[in-house]
Image (cartoon, rainbow, N blue to C red):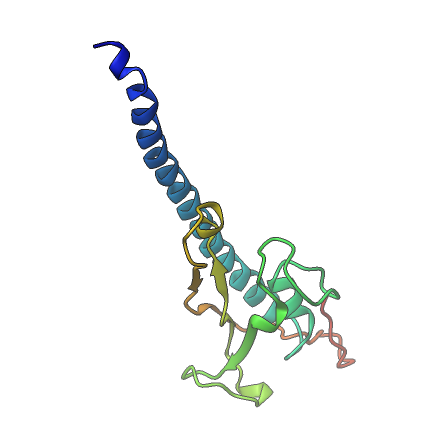
Length: 160
């Protein structure tokens, strides 16, 4: 009887190990998705904080939002797929409507739109189709501050 069950342990291990690794990869992928969501939230916070002190429409706002240097446009070094072109900066009046009149600006909103996250599980498990998650729009709104104006009477502006 013992000779007939010799390969049974290997078969049981293969079944249990397959389930274990699928579960392990799912947990890792869920952690990656949480990291992406937290990074996008932090990115909009960084962008909004800079936008309230920089001149309206300054290029460094989008660059700093995606964790680049103020003068370095392009892809984020932290989050693959995030680019400065995904950043939208809105200047809002008292009612929350977008305004282009400098004196009416009361709030600044920085949004990340159109970001998609590619899941790694399909790459790790053969036979699964490629999957992506489209992130919702992440936004942070802050009350305006100087908007780049320096109170020295010269009318100069300042921004990193």
